[in-house]
Length: 268
Length: 100
Image (cartoon, rainbow over all chains, first blue to last red; front, side):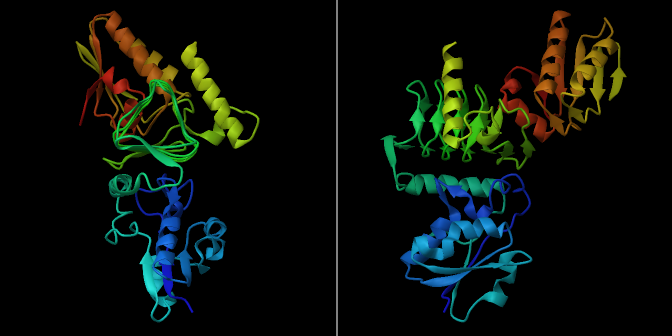
């Protein structure tokens, strides 16, 4: 018997670039996908089994869900033709809780996908509320949260609030924060500035570039304060790490090579 | 590309893309259109939907041209995507921008 029905978000206006690397249900909030946070919340509230509705890349959602086992749940994935929330009524089991992934657990329902500005506001709120809660994160100075396995140059300038995820690299002279979120395995190169901005996972932010009030994920650049979005085609400015110069092939190798490039160019 | 030539200024508009394929040509064409008396070069970027590092290079080259003759380059009403790239590269602090 299902005791919850969880609706994943569809990609709406303004989220073309932000929804491209992975389904919005897997959008990371300080290293944890939104779907992970929602399922953990359902499990903590005693739910046991339920349906997950999606119309966006169901194979990726299924690979993440693993039938709910990581959360001690039993889940069944249902692929819908249209927006999952619009089709929820026809799938909702009697007495089950309806959860729409349009807000963070504990926050007021709705709004998350209204506009990039709303998403950034939610990320900022999460940074203020649970920046230190993620596994491996330590607070190195007030409001500055850095993963133990992040590599931050001693010459980088960090200003709280900011959050730097696992495996991320920050080059010398880089200015991070206030209001900066650097997701896992990203690289912010030397002298770059990231203020009131989000850098998505596995993203290279080029030397001396400046991100303000923006989302940068792969080559996608979204100014959250205006909603303007564009694709950056110059890889030395902004790129998915996997698309940078060829290395030994592994992701770790690519990060190592990017780091080597960053620090050797800084010394030259 | 459209040009409006006046005694002291040249205004260029309808630049829809400034990329590796066309930026050098645009730069040379604009330089060739400049009269010696013109000390003000205005590039209307309101219709520009794409710009990359080649396009930025053309802007810098044109600014250098204008400075060499004691004049100035102004970017008129850059589109939101152009502004994003100018800000990403910090060139919004180097180039004169006249917003919409």
